[in-house]
Image 1 (cartoon, rainbow, N blue to C red):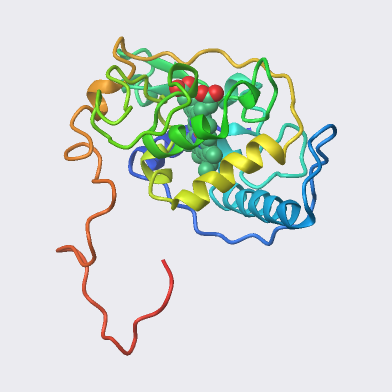
Image 2: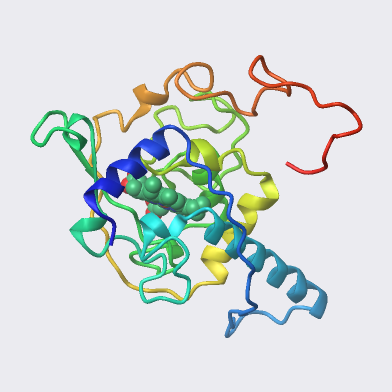
Length: 245
Ligand code: HEC
């Protein structure tokens, strides 16, 4: 359960760019794929590695904190099945702070399990990738490779239906391609489908497009991130440079 206070905290965190850094060791649990075409051992191993990588990213990025039931509750009932109680809803807008203030939008963390009717089963891994990289809702965005962040260009939808806050896609988009594909692989191939219909999120008529209209220049940071070091950062001495991200 997420308390009201935590919900507001989550929203604030998400809007201010959420970043979780905890590392959690992944325990091997391979999803059986009945009926799937026989793959070579090599392909199998590659798929397992990808699914496990996606699992580790999902756990360490607290996806379960919103999509249920808890940040790292991978073995608990309801893992990533989406909202099941009003406690998991978000109030977005002034009403998050002052009850009754307008505008007020209710948003609902969705079912991320591969159920065909109520979850991500309906979407391809590319549609999930696009949701995480560009913030576009899979239901309203075709299965195409997107090469621009400007609406109408490079397959970026002219009238994008962005994912509602506080889904932290402005942070997730900075993951590498491999990381996003791994998440998509875990959600589609590493989870059992669970039926759980989640209500549609409410939003402004333009589905938040005006919030992100100037993207990537103004309201969001830029994508890809500007080169290091920016004015806030300092170059490291060659000797003390650590490898890593
Ligand atoms: C702070 C809360 C929060 C966190 C943390 C969060 N999400 Fe979400 N997510 C949401 C909400 C709310 C929606 C619904 C958006 C909408 O309805 O437009 C959503 C929607 C999505 C969707 C679109 C699903 C669909 O059917 O349209 C995907 C995919 C997704 N999240 C994946 C993730 C992944 C992967 C992570 C972790 C890396 C994550 N989310 C972390 C709140 C969150």
